[in-house]
Image: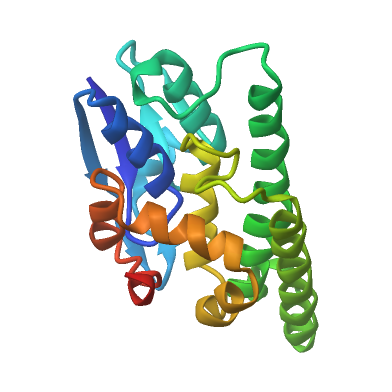
Length: 214
């Protein structure tokens, strides 16, 4: 049995989606947060950085970092159907774009949303937010330029890339504006939001930012 440590509007959404698609048994353990910060002493024993998510594995070990958890679960449970076969070009593309999004979209989003955590100078926070917004938008544009005409990131088959991309779009500082200028990303987000398994998780995680696409 897996235990997923989660909270609303966090990156636990992505491994939750992979676990749900695989149809494996897992428990959700809600982590207490106060004003957006983890306020849960017990969780620090699970995740030294106090970052959500964390996944307690059946053997008692712990995985942290949403990308690592998503990829590990997808590899262990190929029945989820969200990871191309090992050694293929599509698998390599998953690795490339997962790293692009976590480094160039997710991290700047954190800097934008929690600029006070990235400087000791309160007067510098607005500059951090502006630079982060520009970095995010440029990185989304790179994704949009590379996408094909298929319904999903890599074409005809949904992968972990689509799950992560939709979540990051939810956390953009202006989701409607983003998706208006990136129609291919908007198409993927629409498909994910309507997905029979993944779609309901947007409500569970209080990520209603894509509802206007329905």
